[in-house]
Image 1 (tube, protein in one colour):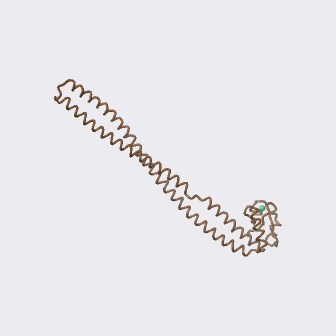
Image 2 (tube, protein in one colour):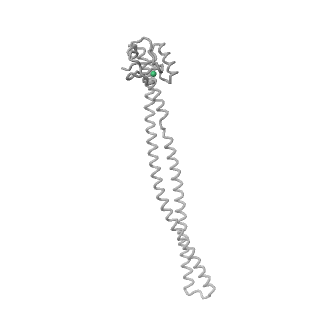
Image 3 (cartoon, rainbow, N blue to C red):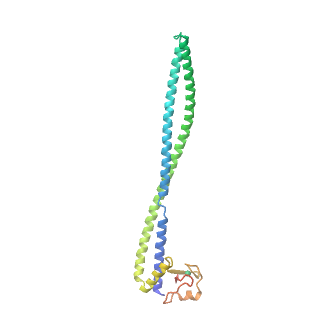
Amino acid sequence: MNEGLALLYELQLADSGIRDRERALAALDDGSGSRAELAAAEHRLAAAEKRLHDDQTTLRDKELRLASIEQEQADKHKKAYGGLVSDPKELAALERKIEELTQLKSKLEDEILALMDSVEEQRASVVALREEVERLRARAADVEEHYRMERTRLEQEIQELQARRTELAAQAPPQLLAMYEQLRQRLGGVAVAGVVDGRCNACHNAVPRDMIDRIPRSEMPIRCETCRRILWVVS
Ligand SMILES: [Zn+2]
């Protein structure tokens, strides 16, 4: 067996392994998308909570106002019909005032009812938004945890493969190594292709039988007729 070529094939495996892991590393989701989604949901929740709080305050104010109108109305009623007012003008003025208060009360009651409905709806929507925020927070944490684990694993594997590459490159015959590096640069990072099931596993074209037989023993690298990569028979 041509030890030099066997070594180049090992070197190629290390280099391809490094490249695959570097690509995987670049494609990893670091969780920034999930974080942004979480931040947007938190923003919506804060706005909904503020609106709910404001409407609850308005509702309380209106209820207080209603109570004070009811009180005023009762006072006026007592005054008008308690036998204390004998002047018809004063009585008429009081009755007008009572009527005014009745209308005001009715309007306020309508507003309070509408506001109560709205507050109920908003409470439900705040609950739903809180759940949404919790769900997104858990998901963002998951994505980030997965990212940290995967990054650590990939970086460690890259380090190991780089150490292996250095070791192999030191053992390879200098001329073969130079050829390897040149081809790798020209051919998209792959200088050595394995022959699998009678085909070059880089370009997938068939390799003639007699060529395959010569590969392991040949002193000179045998190259794929189609893609020009150095071929090696994977045992
Ligand atoms: Zn090929």
